Each structure stands twice: as C-alpha cells, then as structure tokens.
Length: 114
Image 1 (tube, rainbow, N blue to C red):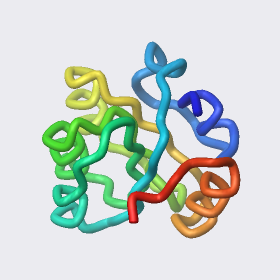
Image 2: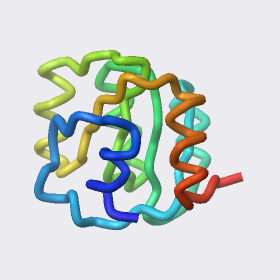
Image 3: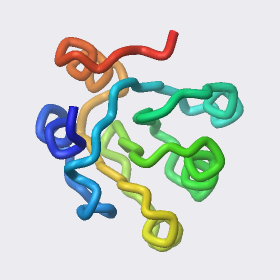
C-alpha cells in the first residue's frame, strides 16, 4: 500500500517526507518500546508509536523504517522533524489510538510482523 493511502485511512497529517508518499509499505509494527522495534528485521515496514521524542526517529533510522505514524494525536517536536528530514523518514500524525489505527490498517491489508 502506498504511504499516501495509509495517511488517508487513518486521517493522518503528513509532517515530513511528502516526497515519499508513493513509496510502498507492506507490514506494520506498533510499539512505544523502541527496544522491541529494534528486534524487528523486515523491509517495507511502517512503525506506529505514541513516543514523541528523538528516540523514535533514531530507532527508525537503525531499523531502516521509512515511515512513522505518531498516534493518539500527539505532536512531534521540531528536533524530531529536523532529524526525520535529514534521514528521509516520513512522519504522519494521526488522531486515532494505536489500537484503532492498527485495526484500520490491518483491515486494509497491511500485514502484522508477528
């Protein structure tokens, strides 16, 4: 599924990475524990998290995750935006809970990692 379609499904606002909206994602992982994210080794992965600090961006960098959805209507910091732009990571903010966003994406065909 294209990232722009993901954003539409979860009523997301694209904060960074608008140039990547035609990129494809196949799987998603939802977690606020970045140590759990680091254990996932999958391509074309989408991360859903409520963690709004630079740790989420740095973890995405190390895990080759190109798109992060920030759930629960949380707002990213300017520092997160700067790092994400440097790393070409798309950040999408969604008003939905992690559970609701995950369910919507699952029903639309995004596969779970586990």
